[in-house]
Amino acid sequence: MRAVYFAWVRERIGKTDEELAPPESVVSVADLITWLSARDEGYAYAFENPDIIRTAIDQNHVQHDALIAGAREIAFFPPMTGG
Image (tube, rainbow, N blue to C red; front, side):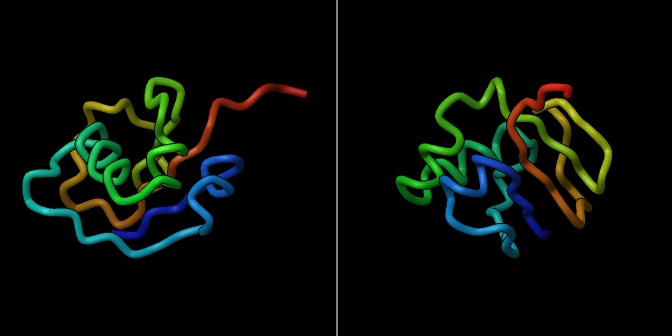
């Protein structure tokens, strides 16, 4: 699956996107965030407050309990304000 990072999530991780192959134990968005956070300091910083991170699977907004099986793309972005 492809992970795509936006705004300050991208800045903290240091990349716009990447291909991921999480272990079988990673089944939900929350699991994926936990797994990514353990990769290094940049990921840990980006996901330090996971409750504010918004997520989309294949361009559909989802909650963190959403299952990731079969996902082609998972996007992570901070809350956005109108303007």
